[in-house]
Image (tube, rainbow, N blue to C red):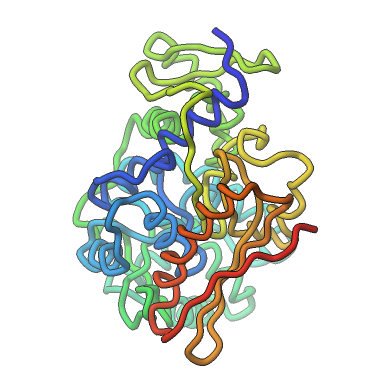
Length: 366
């Protein structure tokens, strides 16, 4: 069967809980979403607020403090919030990609650095308990005084299964002076030793399918997805997109069809919805790419109208007033503007709870 772009759009929106907010526990939502990017403090909170009925900031904080969810380097080597259960299963599949990332980034700074040696020394240091990277780097520098100290810290960070410890946090629950712990000691469970690549592919398809093998690699950074999908093929259903690419999916995953109603929604910076496919037209038109995917690998916070990215947004507080500004790419219909405004009025109170007054404005399309 062939699936149109709108078919694919609606199928992924259903997986990502963006066709309707769902009454689901935040931990289960994090797993269904395939994790949430978390380089900055607010985005994972906004991502859950847009998808989970009744979500509050303290819900995610409780999961992090209770060791049920962790913030760690995961897909594409970027910081994500994932459930502790998913970390144990998926993190080993990512290690070859993370190691390649270390060697790629540090090419000219590796003099005197042996990756396995630095990793072993850092593991021994962290065995005594959580440490900040400053203290870890200082200790490694005493052992290797002529090596690049920041490079050694980067090696340790991506070579070891580490999680951030949620102590000394800001108001959004993210460390102001991050300390890291060995994941197995923090979670209290050993990492999986087999089946991790298969689990990674299945988790991806559940969250972002139907998709091609190249999409799995785009989302995760992991090589070899095509071979894994071939082994899983008997368990999957197969479709084709408008470009005749072969797409795979879980048999019972939702595919509501092109006519499914998609409400107005706000997505945070770095939301995986706009990063998880090679063909990003599923959500972002080619004409709008440069306004979504910004220099410095930044990804703008976006608005969804009829399931597709139709603009960006930002919230700021001056003294006691909080203002959320919507910047549409094109003129909006009256209904779309009204729907976005209603959603924005709730969102500005969520992202700037300390403000006394709140406002929503719409910039002119440009």
